[in-house]
Image (cartoon, rainbow, N blue to C red):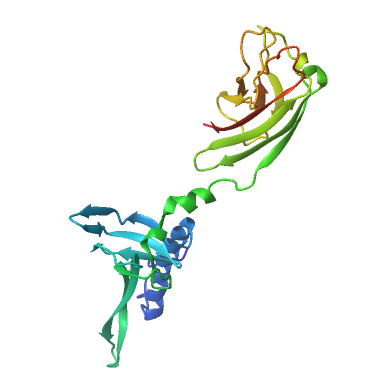
Length: 274
C-alpha cells in the first residue's frame, strides 16, 4: 500500500507529484475493494427505489463500474416511452484552477451519475439500471469453491455393495459445506434387518471440510414405484444420514423387502461447519 512518511524534519517538498501519489494511495485501495464485487455495474450501497404518484425515485448511493467507484446522486423518472429503459448516466465535471504561471487548467475533477431515460445502450458512460447487481453477488461467488471435489464410494457386498460418487465443495464466506451424491446399493439384502439398523460408512471428507458438530440430513429414494422395508410395515421414502466431526459420511441404509435386491438414494444438502 502506498504511503508517505511525514515525520522527517527539514521541510517536506510538497509538489504535484506527491499529491498525486497520495491520491493514488486511496483510489487504488478503494477500487481494489470495489473489484471484489466484479467490474460492474455493481451496486455497493444505496440506490434504493421508491414509487409515489407515478414517479420512481432512486436514492443516493455508490456503484462500481469499469474499475471506478462512482457516486450516484438521487434522481427520479416517470413513465417510459415505448422502447426506452431507465439508464444510469455517468457524467464528468472539471473545475478550473489558475496556476502560479498564470495558466488555467480543469484540475478539480468529479465523476457522478444520475438517472436518464433512453434506448438500452451500454457504454463507458451509461448502462441500464436493471443490469446493476448487488455487490455481494459476485463477491459471494468469489468466496466459494467453484469446482466440485469428489469421493468414490465402494463398500463390500456384505455391507450392501454400495457404489457411486459423493461431490463436495465449501462456501468460505458462509463457512458451509455442500455435499451431493447418488448411491446405489446392489446387495441391499445384506443390510441389517429391521427393526435394527446401523450407520454405514460411505466415505471420509479431507481435513478442512470437517464440521465442528455432527450434522444430520436425509437422503431420498426416487423411483416410479416405492419399495417396502423387510418387515413390510413401512415404505422406504428416505433414510437418515450424518457427517461427524471426523468427516465420516454415514448412511442408515434400510433392508428392503425380500423381492428387492438393490435400490438407490440421492441427496443434496448444505452443512454448517461452525
